[in-house]
Image (cartoon, rainbow, N blue to C red):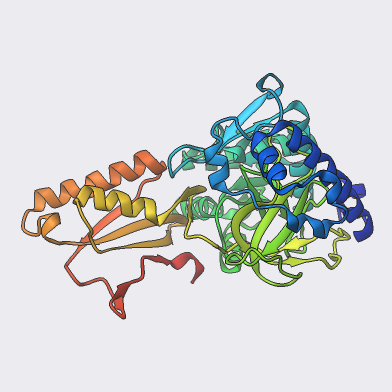
Length: 433
């Protein structure tokens, strides 16, 4: 079984923890010196790097949250001068200002090698032709996977998103062997193949690396049977590095976290208490190798659990379970983060007051679809069809402008949305059913 970096992926637990401790002390010193946010926190609490004599001491340090990053927008969390930053990416910024992240030349090299690990674990080799159907631009997904494939020596087709017919034409003509996309888009490609009458066995696909949104084992089975490939999951987030935090090997028994670059913790999302291995909770990550944008105990909001037993593939790294839910109410739709509260604010603004509504997320033709069901009230002009249509279009337009995704808006009769104990279930996510 191929392993990209055997030295760092197959260390003993003692070696991993010793390396993590050394790197943690170094990054603590660096952020205390160069990042005002951390300097204030450490000084107020009287924390110095030398106080961290074991990994268990990490719990003495406060968490870093998304709010902290937004308060320091755009460059307040950078640990190097801008002249040393060679690349700037950001989160989707669907709740206002985006989170800005930077990379030095060394960060780009580190990123490339981390993604090369997860791609190698998924079966990618220098003989492969990798078609990347992630967006290229401020989003980290496209560039991150591109760097990893090139580090391996594979040939890369940087297709970007959309234009499904051309994607399939390229896939057939160029004999693509590896597909990189969201799982939803993989199903959309499968749907289009079937409509065109193309047998997936006629393609050269052998592997698919999918991320950017939650997906179940049922979805994996569907992708594999419809595209005739081996589908693996990978995990990353812009605030930490982008793709390259963790990825599945061919055993498909959890995502290997690259612990020489990140310290994972699982906490109770309510109390913040660190939980023992095997317990489900919120994933917290500390970066150990990032130069431009180091993070100390960053709360990801993603719910998972960790397994520290050695994998059958030979890797000794901790494995995390697939992410299927969050500690907050954030939804991930086609790789874009969006909060129900954001949608509620738009609905109330357009309706000029409180209005009963429900958000339904499901996969249609392989793609994530978000539908907003709104009850017609006097505020939505129950008897005026033109004003109802205007309301629908206005809500769609504002969500598209703020979140960058298209949604469906459906108007229904007053009191027709199901209530339980008088309350409407605000979000129904059918992707997990």
